[in-house]
Image 1: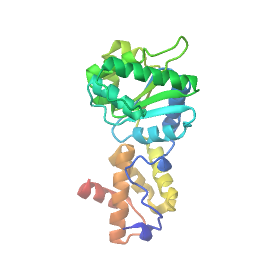
Image 2 (image 1 turned 45 degrees about the vertical axis):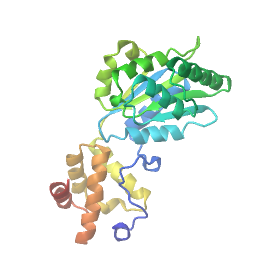
Image 3 (image 1 turned 180 degrees about the horizontal axis):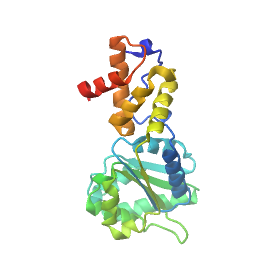
Image 4 (image 1 turned 45 degrees about the horizontal axis):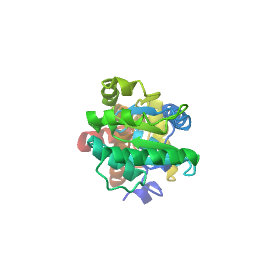
Length: 264
């Protein structure tokens, strides 16, 4: 609706995990380095946490893009609210294993064979579990047991657990699994200057101008969002819409506060 008015090629503040709109803050860059190390060194398990809307899912999609198919066999589970048996079946499905068995032992043998096959073919197996705070207690134990699939010098499968802050405490309640988490990182909200840079980056990505938002507007957006990317996107998107409807030339602090007060 407002694209032509603001001279944009596409909507800059969509809340979808589009790797093309990944903004590399200092923390996001460090998170990627740690995750890449965990996977390439086959460390067994890594943990990435952050507040709702902090960019965890987008980061995971960028991470996947950076892993060559020739070197990695990747499964992605986005709804892990499953009992232990169904979880193993979902692992099979995500890795492209076709088995209709309901025998847990048989499913594990099939999975172990795939892991060994990948190793022999020079590929690493990675299972990414998004929204991992939804995992059932019994399934945490199943993940621990799957980490027993290992050779003398390496794990046969690497797990990347992604979730909200409470996931850290949940894992601490499973001590044997907690001890197997080799890499941990928590994404904090963006500070005020990074929030400004994030907004400018998103606008420039679609042909926008850096001066679309006034200095006071950036501060008002940060005050509302607390540096959470999802909330930044919401307020910026609506500010551009209301600014278009009011035919303003720039987004100022008063308009942002109006959007927050009336719409969010």
